[in-house]
Amino acid sequence: MPKDLFPKLCRPDTLKIAANYVHDDKKDDFIPDTFRNQDYIFNLEENLTRLAQSLRNGTYRPRPLKEIDVPKGGLAVRPGSSLDFEDHVVLFAIAYLLAPIMDSVLSKSVYHFRVKKKGKRPHPGKLFQNEGPVLVRREVRQDLRIFGDWYEAWPEFVAEAQSIYEQEGFSFMVESDISAYFENISHPLLADILRQCAPSQLHLINLLMEMLSFWATPSLAGYRPQRGIPQGNEVSSWLGTLYLVEMDTELFKLQRKGLIKYVRYVDDLKIFTKDRRSARSVIFTINRILRCLHLNMQSAKTEIFEGEEVRKRLYDEGVAQVTEIINGLPEDPTKITRKQKRDAEAAVRPVFRSRFAYKREMGKEDLRLFKRTLTLLMRIHSPMAVRQSLKWIWRQPALTEKVSRYLSAWMGRKSVRAGVESALLGEEELFDSQYLYLLPMFRRSPVLNSRHKRPLMRLGCGGAYHWAVRAEAFLSLILFALDDRDFKRLHRRYFKETSATVRKTILTLFLKAPDRAKKLMFCATIQEPEEETNRFRKYVWALKNSPILGQPALAVLGRIEKDPARLVATLLTALQSSNIETRKAVQRIAVERLADAPSKLARIAYERISNDGMRMIEGGK
Image (tube, rainbow, N blue to C red):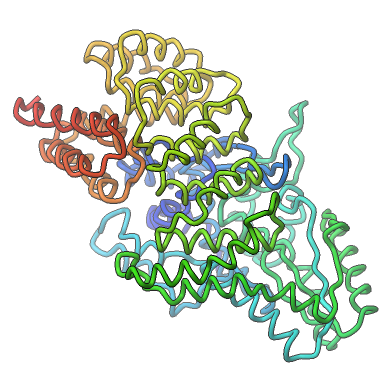
């Protein structure tokens, strides 16, 4: 058993590995950060050294979760959350140290969030030799992942289930669903499981449990129950995989006797038996185990399937067909020929029409096929699903994230622009998280113009909206011309605002203000108590006074950032730099992006940045 690994957690090099992982994991956050966390990353070495010191001396404290309701089906929601960048780093660093120890207790029947084999993981010391960059290339960051990728694990999970049914004579299958699984994971039971698996790592485990307890959703009276873990990050999914290890132990006993076969993917469980009586018996066993884990089985979603019913559950010909088409295309979309696009579209059209043309609501299997089909249509740049996708924003809100990514390529179509604008600015009420997907898409509209400024300002100042919605609305305003009246309104809103993220976004807008108003606003925030807002203010002042900051972030964002508002915000911030080379980089990126500016507003914003950059370079200001 390895010695206490807590001292290793407190080392900057361990936290550096975690920071590289988190930089990738946060791109899928339910609540995106205004600057993609650049205001933390720009001074990452110093921040990680300070974080390591706080872990060593016991002064580290996690920050509150950023929470938002995420639609499931109908009007039902599940809790979505995003972690502060620093907390996410600590959480992953703990998992990075514990996962290799814990993985050995998981059954071979468990798929996903399994630790990669050593041959597939580079030695961390080889990544950071000679004090290399804090954030390494994306390809190397992917290698840092300790867990296998879902797109490899899920097909293996399905293939194993199919093999059990086809080749081993198990003709009955039990499918079970756990009610509100992540919300009901018991902290004391999880701690016991972790301590049994790694008894020498109590210091790490205790810190982890303190973090989870702090993040537990409090009651209206302020009581924090000892259950529930944040959803929306891979470490929580790994903990969710570990939590059912006692169920694995009981099921494996039955499997060794030849009574059952089973496979598990986090909390997705498929159990195979040779007769109905055994299938019923195993349901009773699962129910008993779940009660011991303080969990409940969803009786409405627990079923026994037999014979051809099993085949239908395990084999979706539509998904298999679409996957085969995708696999037949070049990985590089630019190398897909017109003929390949036509053939792929012709092949998928019958599947799409038969499954989705007339449906008002999709089940679990339909959702999987629909998402897979949209992936294909995005690869071949086909508008086949545009009309249906606009409808699914209302019919199936849980699809908004996937639908918005697909529709964003078709904002040039009047019907798409009208549908998105109606959804955002109309009378119908959206889920909060839907705004977070649709607003970035709206910012890429070619007809975005001055008439949209007032409704966006109203959305930002509207106290009834979730703070993340207000932040995204304010970020959209960075593409517009703002006058003295607008800045006065933003100034008043800043000092009424309770969210640090919204205040940070308002500060970003003041980078567009006249010098005097900008200076007064930033001076007024010197005593800002909230760390997130203070971090951004320090970032701006550091850019003004440091000769080296700003360029690494620009080099990446200038190539990959598709959201014009986020890019403009980043360029405006970097333009505050005292470094002539950084200013030149800003000016160059602004000129390069003029050609693909999605709207006249975005083009004007890039032109202004380019002109300001040139003026500052020539004037040496």
